[in-house]
View 1 (cartoon, one colour):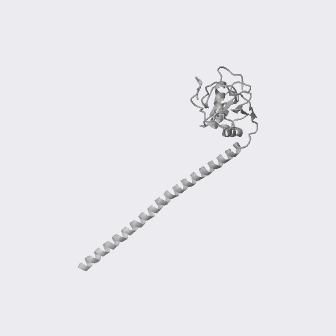
View 2 (tube, helix red, strand yellow):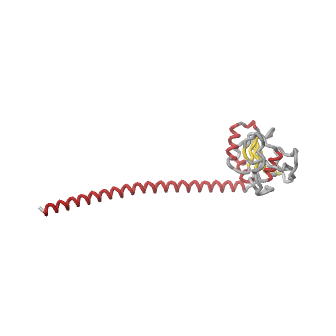
View 3 (cartoon, rainbow, N blue to C red):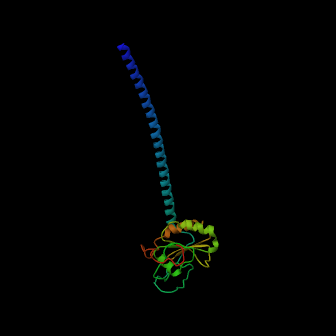
Length: 217
């Protein structure tokens, strides 16, 4: 009787051990699937991030290469004056690319109405690029220019009355006139001349000046 009971106990323990072993095997399989899936996701994220970084590096290199070359169509005005004056100023270029100007600069930003020449010239002295457009180019073109400017600092974007070309990009002593917001030279102009070598006062602010009353910036 004792032998039979002992054998039954051994059999139960053996069955329990087998069940427990099968459970542990199932847990290991589930863990392998879970951690394998997590690993695959992490690997996919690493690959995606790496591709984005590599792509951005390539884009930056291409932009730097383009900005290092002369930009076709630029007009240069090396002898503009730079005195601080009060009142209006008659400029030789339209829009101006430099010259005497108001002691207070226009805050950089995107404007939906014209901004004063005498203050915006001062912004260019601080290294800003001023993109102006003829209001007749249409909203689609204006939207493209707004997207081009994006969150860049040291850029003014505004309409310009009686502009003789659809779009003009101006920096101190430099100007590029184009027919379309899709012209790739605009982005290169920004890359090359935002606080570029032409800047008369490197490091000077493009905020803390004036935001013309009634204009959205």
